[in-house]
Image (cartoon, rainbow, N blue to C red):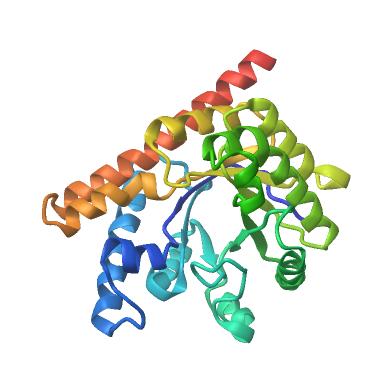
Length: 310
């Protein structure tokens, strides 16, 4: 155990790979060098928005980027030089079952970029396929042990997808699943993974509108002496109203230290740039403004809660 991270953490994530390749540009793997450069340039636009937000007052010690090595190697290096928080994606993109992006060489890749956080996205439902959950947990323990042994932070992005059985039980109603089932499944997943020796410093979790559900996540993440483990909210591509509701609910709960909101920050702007409808400079401005809005809403809700409880 040990470790943890309980300082403010305001992440702009753009480690998406398959969704950029296929969803934004319609590219199919393997990419040509020219196609790779096109995707990398789109990520540089997001990074420029992040740097503009820094210039406009987002606190440098809390601000960070989450990006992949494939399209963002130069960004990871530059951000480290700037002294801002860097998070590098370690998982293979778009997989149902967690696997390392670079196979057995994953340790070398983490060491080369030396990010503040090694980050994984994992789909894990405790009522899902048990054998797959055990395989994933075994690989994740390797990463957890490596991070602990090398003094790196470990960020775990937990996605709890609805199983076919759960979908049948709820007649396919995703909103009911989010409200009625997902919160308790997230708690169960965190506990199972901890039991398997997986010890993140930060849990990056799907948004919750109920403050009590947020508190239950923190209680699970911090149980058994894990007092400094932090939680952050991810965006899941929700609309702005959904993001704001999640930010306000989480900010009111001690233990939630920030957020990582990606697609809602930049996707529509990048589509406009791709289609020639928006100038690059305007896209950078828009991304900076969105990111700054998330910071403002989260910090204001946090201050409001602190005043109310003092």
